[in-house]
Amino acid sequence: MDIWEKLYLKAKEQYHPQEVTPFIYAHGVVCAIEAKNGEIYTGFCIESCCDVVTLCAERVAALNMYVNSGQTVIKRLIAFRDKPPYGGGSGMPCGACREFLMQLSLENKDMEIMVDYDKRETITLGELVPMWWGEERYNNSKIDE
Image 1: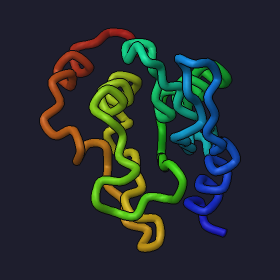
Image 2: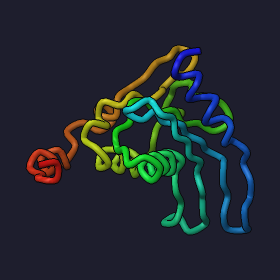
Image 3: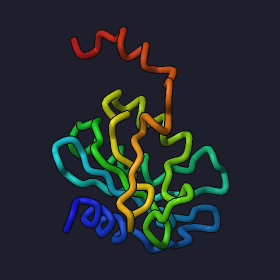
């Protein structure tokens, strides 16, 4: 079993779409990430009729990683609905998630994101977010000093 199958199976455990309330729908999109140290974290989407409070599966997984381990660097990510990513943009993080993942760590630009599960085709976050506006700010930051 390769790492992508492990990630897929961990995320799939979270997939069971449900209406939580007349306003909240959850578990319709799931995600698993591999942290820099090899640990796997999962998340599921929590969608609201008031879009500003919606949380995507990718951000929930990344927040679970940070809350539970303090890590901010992600090596691999897979996200999907009822079946694994199959190309054509399926499984790609939305713009808000791409931005959050870049802001979480500049190293995340090298994370692999599953594009097509059967073909094991991936793309990096840096390829999805070329010429990211925040790189200069990271380079001038004194946080790690």
